[in-house]
Image 1 (tube, one colour):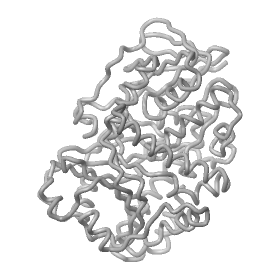
Image 2 (image 1 turned 30 degrees about the vertical axis):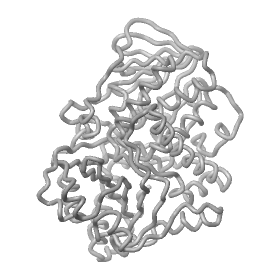
Image 3 (image 1 turned 90 degrees about the vertical axis):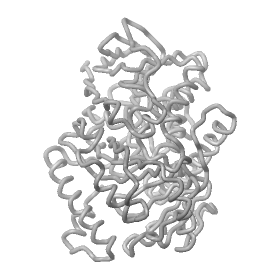
Length: 467
């Protein structure tokens, strides 16, 4: 019976934490695991996926003793570092259909739309104050190469009778965003933005109120499988009947999962509040905005007038070994500053006060995958959220609840369960070397296409090798 060794976490120093986390002084509020303890279900990871799984299972099995082990503090990982964009899976319905079939794709997309309504209820009821603003999600093009990126998804939605997207023209986008750089696109109306750290902290508080035990600052160092697996931390050992691994990018350390998972970085900046400038250009609501380049830009403004501007950088590490570079880059967010000033030249004199990074767990199909380890039917995993999780992880919690509780239902049978349909990625060093070459080609392709220049055939060919 081999022990599963987890990688030591690389917690971000306070000064490298995201704007979201720093703005609410988020930190640990529960004690680390000390000594020996036991439970029915141990969950590794206190982000959205882990907390939603705990809450879903507690709803269905109130008697179950659930303990969450979080390496740093709840929300310190991807859940508190993302761009705060809320939109459904309908934007990926064509990708879902290709992977899981029509019925499953439609079910999963509708489930994420239901998740958005659930977030709305949690906000309206006062259960979680997450600054949710359902002002829409704009999916736009700012160059000819980006035009029509949404066509496959929107046409499939119409074929399914789902009227999810409305076409946008240049004047619509200018009126909504205050920027004329993007000139065509679509709008998902029941979507928007949240303060992601507030959501993560709110989920932690909700879990605690339901009797779920949480130990922060308790990174799991190793797991000994068996009828009752043992999870060892620096301060203690937890035994459980079942284990859920919901540690996002850190699951790349597990040999069985690593061939299907790769880790890239995303970088985000936050400006000083500039409400007067934003009001002058007409950017006043809480919509989330993306463009359609391969390393997508995503941005929003907060209620106070801070501009959040992010981009997938495609930054990688050899053998997916996550280090301090995944917490904060060395360039002060220069690439994002350049792009923000291209989209919003009016912000050129507004200081950037925060820049941070984060590791993203990706699969080749850019959709998450759920299941249990091949030789350990009581050790489950949820991974591959690809930087899109606010409306998706509530659905992930339902899938994981059915798997852990042994239910035979639409969630346990859905096509996102099991690695069998997923593409294996190359081993090292081919993975790292190939990813660097592809990343360079994508960046060159993006830079040329944004100027409406056509990249050469070699650049296009190499960029197309990206998963």
